[in-house]
Length: 265
Length: 76
Image (cartoon, rainbow over all chains, first blue to last red; front, side, top):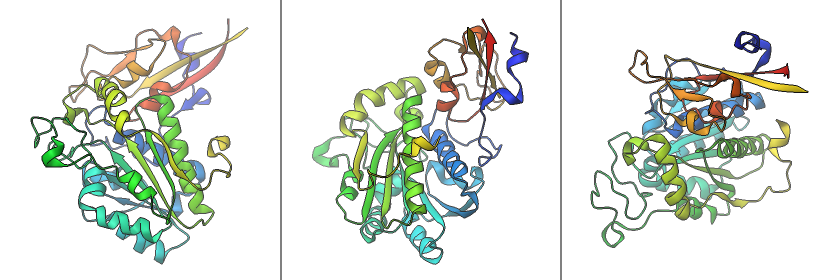
């Protein structure tokens, strides 16, 4: 059997979703943002809600998310994506609203907006990309930077006596009664990508069913440029170090009895 | 017995040569090319095409979605 016999349109089992356009992504080679962009758009496409979904783009590496995602998008000021999402969801309660934010955006400048949005229990989905560094501005220390990690602004490693401890914002929002589904995922292996996709799909389905409450999905990714590693090394480092502090898995799930979203695939 | 054969097509001009697909492929089908694309990256290509089963693992981890996967049943 030749390659020409296999490469035919009827044999195609994986191709790029139509909700991501053909512009080359602006991320560094090997960055996890691209995977999260793709799985988010795949979920929207598979649920058939592309005309009813509104995304809020952050400030940070993913600031150009509206350039690549072929759905309605709104840019928000730095850290204010949950506030903008609150407004959009209250005006259009039937629409599916998600924010896409990095750790500098959500856990540093936008902490107040995030906490109060979750405390009000707004019926939106927050996708939080945690790479433990400010990637776009050149690799400065973020609140989520691990103890001992070297960045541009802590060249001798993060010292907790003067710089504080890495912020577990996901565990913090899980305490709030307005939040119904909190999980931490990653996109460093094919299995992890499929799990993260199932989590995003579940959160979007919960909005469809009109359940009141915020869904919060943290996705740990690498930042190989900021960490000064190759993409494969960065993923290994993340597995060995990041997951000891930021343990993957469901943190809060009040909808466990609902049908598993993977079963729809 | 029917055997499953796969093939991948890499968009070489968009590939950034990060190598995550090479690491994700358990059958060592992919490798980074010695040639460079217009942006100066070494794109991935199929070095052992007969080992490919079309499992889509490479495309799943690809951050830039440059990989398209095909799968067909072949008589062994």
